[in-house]
Length: 123
Image 1 (spheres, rainbow, N blue to C red):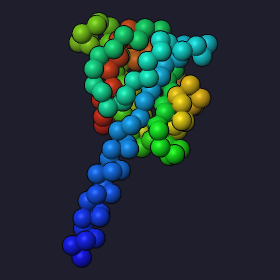
Image 2 (spheres, rainbow, N blue to C red):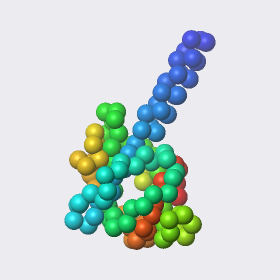
Image 3 (cartoon, one colour):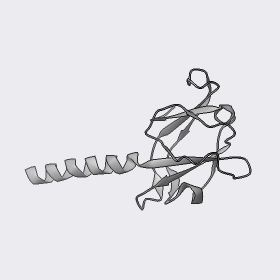
Image 4 (cartoon, rainbow, N blue to C red):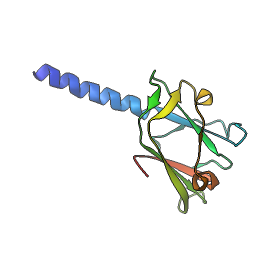
């Protein structure tokens, strides 16, 4: 019985690690990439991302969906202090490369923010 508990604990830790390896890339209305950075959704740093209206997700594992939830918030300033809106993403389709993934339209408030920030959990 003790062996099974250790195995369950190990698998839980391993699964959590894979779930954190979800990346996003942003696109304009005409499906052109905004910048060249793939943003790790578990990194809550503020980043410049003006002009994006869509987002796509990727994950290194063979999963076809990333469970989330992930919260994307748009901001009107580079310090990410004045929110323009937020959007929750759950059970999102992922590809091996975000450029090849399903592009999801951003809510107006999120899209209008020149800066954005990811946080884990619901908005």
